[in-house]
Length: 204
Image (cartoon, rainbow, N blue to C red; front, side, top):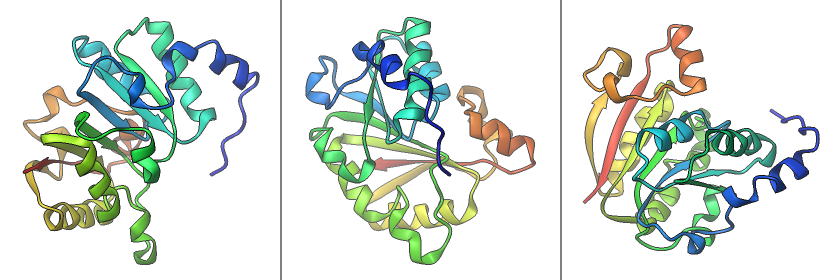
């Protein structure tokens, strides 16, 4: 879906320039936690607020979308989160080797058609990039309402040498719900009766 341009978007992003980086070479604190596809920033800002001692980086390819997240972080006065405007398929252009402690993939586009599977953010070509970026023992936290994406992701994780932990097909009714951060999409899907799936894939 095409995102409508925000009024004075360029000027508003410029006003938040301290929160935007071109690559993680600009960061002082490593390793950090990465969210790919941060949307309007509900998850990343709450995570940064809960863990002020942890450094966070959020990626989003659409500047009109990330504007909301950046302005939210600035309004909250967060000092431990930065943003990158970029695509996950070029992750190595933005992030160096063994810099990431944890990756969050929250409600990524499921690309449900079989012919589109290579576009999923958990397809093995993406996972190999994540493996390069993750520290030894680093983790990928996947959360989705989509069965096709979840099931294919489990297969891809296993094929790429990840160990699976805390797997649940009904997150909100599980023992892991207590520390879950509910995203905008999650609230919407859950309200419509969709079960939320979640798994942690750990690099061996």
